[in-house]
Length: 231
Image 1: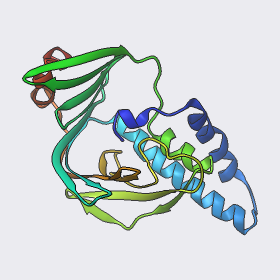
Image 2 (image 1 turned 90 degrees about the horizontal axis):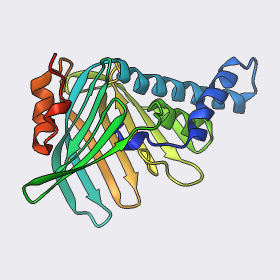
Image 3 (image 1 turned 45 degrees about the vertical axis):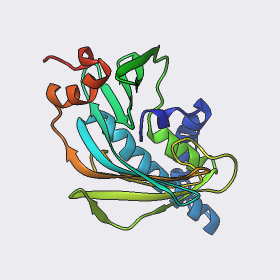
Image 4 (image 1 turned 45 degrees about the horizontal axis):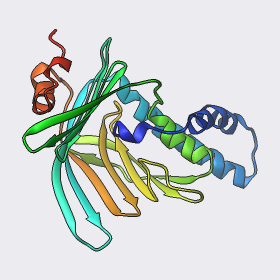
């Protein structure tokens, strides 16, 4: 999930903590409870995978396709990176814009003409990315099913399908969504249907060693070279 997609209400995050242990701890439930418990277990698995990526270092280059409701398409290459360090770095870049979170600061940047423009804000709190998925399922807003086994960019992917059942769509999930992660929590694929159409990211290059040079390639166009670690 991208940085922007991690912004969810505290109630959703709390739901993950409150409901999953109860569902998994019940004994001899009726058939409907068994179905609910199975869904909660899948949500917990997806949440754990998404959160696991926070403890790893990786960079992924995605093929991106946006298909509007009118049938027109837009293609681009986007990149995401996460560096697990004393001061973690999280970057999402594409379409002439970049969002970078470094420690307690977030930089939202665009390029206007030839000049980068960045807005810097404080990160006042964080929600683990798995809370978006897990909380949305255990709160009853989405259904979840497991996708078929597949390899994406040569990496074994664990895929899940989520579908809105009630309420408003959640940012980062939409009306329906496919989310795929590696066993290490590296995002490999997302396909999100929203009111505007369908956005799809599919990894074509996965790198698990990310150094200063790779980060500079993402940060330098926006004048943020100082954010790349020197050590």
